[in-house]
Length: 86
Image (cartoon, rainbow, N blue to C red; front, top):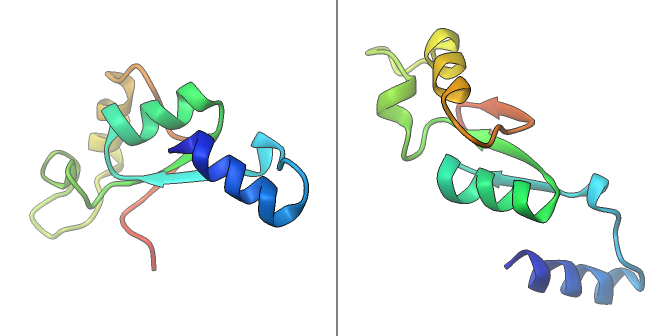
């Protein structure tokens, strides 16, 4: 998907965008964040997706401690994280 998206962006722009200007957005560490890393782009991780139960307290708020522990145990890390897009 990244190659197809980059090709379409290049077609629209008339040039290939630099990967440093691309931000992937996803809620799954093992697919979204890993895919972005493999393609060489930064990723914004949305914590209130498939990992919500692991990262949020009973109040629904993102726990910084749980997030830090979770990310430390992963092979790939996002550039940034937030609960959801707003």
